[in-house]
Image 1 (spheres, rainbow over the protein chains, first blue to last red):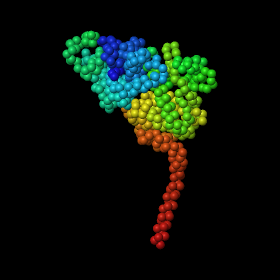
Image 2 (tube, helix red, strand yellow):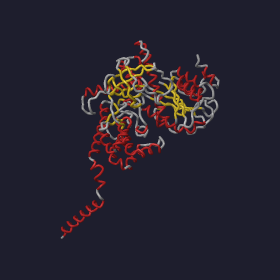
Image 3 (spheres, chains in turn brown, yellow):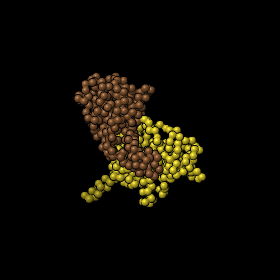
Image 4 (cartoon, one colour):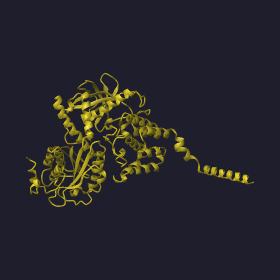
Length: 246
Length: 322
């Protein structure tokens, strides 16, 4: 099972629409969750609308929280999404076998056995979560809380019976045109997730959409290498899309 | 089907007013709501009366069918194990589940189950009202409950004072089984203070030690909440450690009688909750040996005793040489 967890504090302002990018992720079987982080004031109507839309298009959940609740929220969203994905798969099966459209329509006595299977799969299915962190200037004071929350999430995932892996990205990169940077490749060990964002240079731009597109690539090819021949030589996010919309 | 939307349910949901009649879709049971008892992480619990009877029950309406069914599965499994083992431990032979059904709400079906109603107050309220000397006994009964759960193959997970009910005569009952998970699985639901992972003291995999750790934090909270609060916020998450809890236990005179037990629970040294239960019993039933006697023996008495021994020895030597 594949998930992207986007952590941001505002609107995207460069490149592809993040809602479209999330829809592409969902098409690829990757669920997109969004945690909006605000400590003072609000995230703004536009920002919270975008966050909700990204999650909706990505088949996931979203929530706006302060840094104090971030760890707990990330843990809850990840778990909820795993359950939800399995729930949907089980409902499809039920429809095929019994003609029922959903678990909710089974009598409670039969529901019990189905839920046992869902619980079992929730615990044992293997899981990859790509954390995509908005490192625009306004996020700077929140990054240490983000780092702690990532370690805490890893601790929760390590407790599962199934294999769980985390990769960490931030965006934008240092050079222009570098949409996202890999901070930590797939890992199962919380110990490797130290000092993730130490040498980070904060920038103003927030290319959320292009960054999501790059992470989808990473799920596919295991690399962020920009010089892949199939991509052609367009630098813009819009250009990349041609390859997906077939 | 229920709309899942894109929000995670944490905020409080509007509750049904008193007098609402809840009719089961499948089994047609009818229950009249009297008031809200509480709100858990995955549902609202009401005090209800079965229509046509005086008996009060607790009725839990879930936010999510799957979550609630998972909780019901645990309760059913406990119930069947309790029946087959027929052991008297854990109090009277009670049944958790009286009814499981759906209720037609305005926005679709709402799953619910009906269980026994346990009148009482939360552990921290009880202790605040009745005094700290009740901690030994209520703690013992709580450990017995946990031990019973462990022997059935589950751990409670989200142990905190709000989830422990105490009757006016000190009977203890665990409420909210939403966080219960099978031993060996990941802990489903937890609250930071009581979580072993939060203190960097171990994993979030369900084992008996997980509940015992939470129990230790709970006891520290009941006896010395201020210092616990300070310890929790003082350090950065990566430097937070069980050592801070251990030094708190060592420093605090109020925790002294329980220090040995707490130390072992925090370090994860109990091999199981049976062993922990045994030590707790020894701790609370031998207060004279554990807490009071050594501390109360006056220093001068010890010195005088040592001196008199020396004099006797000298006298013996003297007598011998003469």
